[in-house]
Image (cartoon, rainbow, N blue to C red; front, side, top):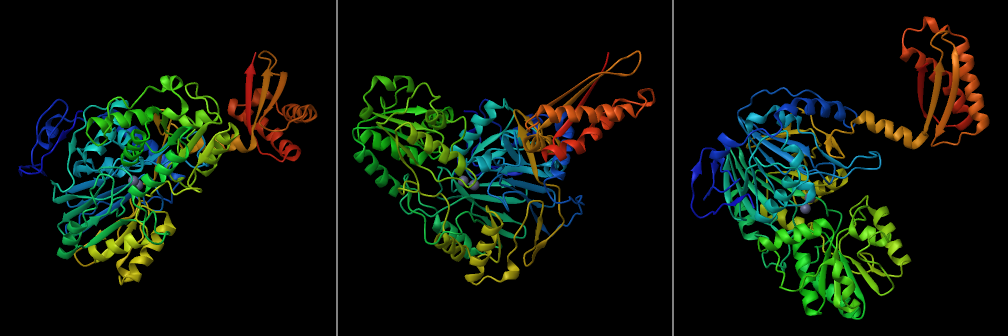
Length: 619
Ligand SMILES: [Zn+2]
Ligand SMILES: [Zn+2]
């Protein structure tokens, strides 16, 4: 482990950072060390990358106004880099004078309109431009929509990272995969406080579907900002640590200028069920399936869920085999830092499953969202040679479907049924407790924090709008609420809140291993190819006489009969007959003539507008 836990008892203030105990170990840097040691990881590429990202952004977001960096000493600026108007790639910067802190650095998964893109991360050009101001990055918890962008973003900006133990363990795994070594990771416990520039940030324990989630109380020169992070209120959490409501209400009593709060479950009335209730439901699954093999798919990062599943396995005398790389990695990491208790002898290798009777085995797998490469998806399609699904299997999917993944996960469920398995998923049994507060919990937080201003976050536009209405229903003035978009700056003084200038923000695509490997041009081509197909026109020209030697037309991805091909050929021949090839200046002019000669005909014949690719050979 290359981060060091900071003990909060002894207050020791470094320049810009208050860390109660900082110990040097290999790879761990305190703020002071960092100033000397931490180097920009990818300095050379910064400029190129930010330029590329500007180009990519142009086509996916509204026109971008260039930021003017007017200094306004009395205003605090909140920059929404991601995570508003969407559920995903959360990232917010808070800026005052020469200081800036960043909250979270998430990723999101591509939509259908982004073929071939693996991940989407926030465009951080603004942060690159303002590198000098960045005092630190504070991470609320270890979900992908909060940490997934980190390994990419930390190649562009340099900053120490602060988070709780499990969060940093998950980040550390990511950084290792990306071979990023020179990053300062600083462990803060819930209840702890750090000082970054003019900001004092207190970490407050909240309940969520991952251990180590915190909300943030940020003391700024204009007042206190309370950021809930992703949260719910669970009075019977698995690890016994209820959201620190008493501390939140103390902070509320002292006066909160602005609250930013999770809007994910604003459409759901009442309260979320406690994580502990899940155990009862799962317990029934174990007792009802006592003669069958059990396979439970869950999020690897939901360590509390995992703990309950392992406890049930012990109770029902089953051995546990983990399946899926992220499941194994996270379980190991969580066990190492004491977040997960795995009794000796409980875990068996997935290869050994065949040596046990069905009723003696529980397989815990990744793949709750039908991710194509996940263990569960491969089991369902019969491509996972370590586990063959049959009619004595019961598969439990213990997670709710993230909107947009329905098709994939129902595909997996269909395939599992086809192989004879029994499948238990959300629509049948309450086997999942959401990690996000529903309306009643949100009302409680609004009441005890009682902020002057409110900005709903972590939601699509309708969630934000409904969350704003909920705040109004509790007595907040409409004029004290703003709904922000990506690229918006909100300016805050001790008694006003309004929109400031726009800054450059949006999405960057990660394609394969590279950032911006798929910019908007590539995506446009991919969509074009997918929808309309491709026609290749191969023209061979005799070098000596400059006359047409041969002509070949190939259609891919569209219905293109021999008759149509012959007709298209005659269009090309006809067009080339009309021009004297000696007068043609360059290849692109000839390509243009060829393209135009067949375009109309192909559209008339196929009702498609395929990409036409002329290939001219002079022989
Ligand atoms: Zn989360
Ligand atoms: Zn989230």
